[in-house]
Image (cartoon, rainbow, N blue to C red; front, side, top):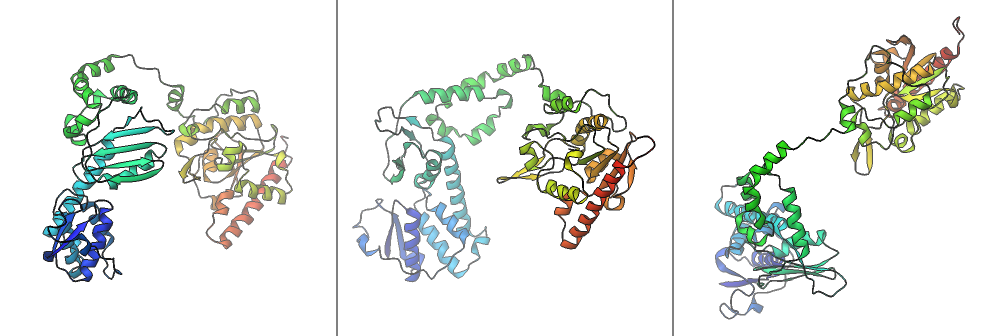
Length: 486
């Protein structure tokens, strides 16, 4: 019979190293008696020096799932945890897929132990309450906490508190060991600690906060007891408030229902405003493009303004013969406040230069004035505006056209074409031809520069780019041609 003693600190690594040696020596589970360091006297089964041999090279492999299971199980308070784990490990060597059989007695037992430990770790993270040690005279503030876990989880869970409170000195004392974090160094004492009792101003502040966020209208006693079991209450400062908060919940709900409702925000009112008609030019509210642009900077007609940096209005001469309309500003446009200054704008500038057109001679705008995006890491990825956002923003576009009164509007992309003509026909089939809007102004459609930049292959991109350049030439020719009405 062999006696193996597992260290009280670094318990998982200690058990793993001993278990490796036992497998190398061919020891069966029945050959070993396991104990935790300090739990038994050394002379009962022999000298501990005889059992702590150097770890040999590991020739036994187990799945990551077993390692994660074992890391939790060694923290369990069951005195048989080490022998159960070694027996399961021994079976894994003979049957590698044994963990897939949840009905196997050893697997079932280990999984239940692991689940109990995981739950205990979660409760420790949720229910530890620090109190400031005002007698501590070091530069860094010091906090102390008392917690009563079911299992030996303090050392494993301490890293969570290091991440949360790495600029403070603190200790978490429990009957199953104490974690110390002093001068940015984490240490652990496995011996049982004495209960800590103290009150401080932070605790009183926490009680005030808890009482004010307690929502009586959402009170569910069974769910609350499940998430905050009563066995933890005597260590929670807010627990002394719970009885009174529950007893007064009915009255507080009545008070909430009888209180005067607040006035909706201006944004909420604007967001519920009906969309502008798509068939009739709205009444002209602005005397100039400058007045319109100033008003658009304060636009709250749809939710897009909440996340965008600013409204990106159109730019160009107020008497431009040609007006170019895209979909919406992109990331660079949102930051700069000018339309078409990013990659799509650079391609548009090349097309205008190839056609001999000065950018300053045309008016450039978008169907939607705010950037719609999805955060992805540090990037903001373009999202297509929905029909409601497009219709709310059409108010500005139609007024822009009414003030500029261009001879031709060039719609780049499906969104602009749909807003201006009411048709969702494929751009490739209609590009380069003159259409008329519901308000009877001339519209020509073409590809959006971003569609060319996103083309799947070089040949497709080349064809689309050639058509785009050709459409710019044709649009400018139509806009500057002389007709009997000029």
